[in-house]
Image (tube, rainbow, N blue to C red):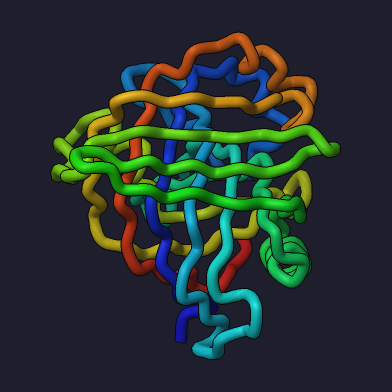
Length: 235
C-alpha cells in the first residue's frame, strides 16, 4: 500500500537558473545535480493537495490544502539505471500534522504558514493564485493561463521539470532518504501572464537572495493528476 495517495492540482512552476554553489549544502549523499541543456534549475512551485489519504485513511481537516515549495533537480544511479528526482529546500503548508509527519519520517523541511488560494475561470483563461505569509509579510505566486491544456513535448524543458519521479532528502552527510512518486504524464497550459511576489531570502535563506532580482527562465502551469508517494528507503 502506498504511504500517501492524493491529487496534485494546478501546479504553478517558476523555473530559475541557479548557481550550483547555492545548492551544495542541500545535496543529499550519493546524488548529483541534474541539468537540462547544461543549466541548473530550481523551481518555485505552488499547487493544491486534494483527496489526501495516509495509508488509505482520510485524516480529518487534512484532505485539501495548499503547498508552496522551492525544489531543485538531482539524479541517483541505482543498479546501473539513473533515477531522476527532486530535493526540496523547503515546503510550506498550512497543516501542522503534515509538517510533523513529513519532517519526522521523510527528513523533509516542511514549515507551517497561513495559506490560501484562488482559482477562477474566465471565458478563455484560468487564474491560479497561491498566497501565504512569511514573518507576517504577504507572499504570492499568481498565473493567468489559457483554459485549454496541451500535451508536454518530449525532451522539452517542461518535460525535464515535470518528469522527476523520486524524492531525495538529506538525512546526514552519509545517509539519504529516498521515496518514489508516481503519476501519469501531465498536460500544461500556456501562460499568458504571471506575478511573483516572493522574498526568496526570507522564505528559503540568504543563499537564494539573488533570486529576488532574477527573472525565471520559464513559467508554466500543469493540470496535475492523482499521485502516490511510496514508502521511504535509505541509500
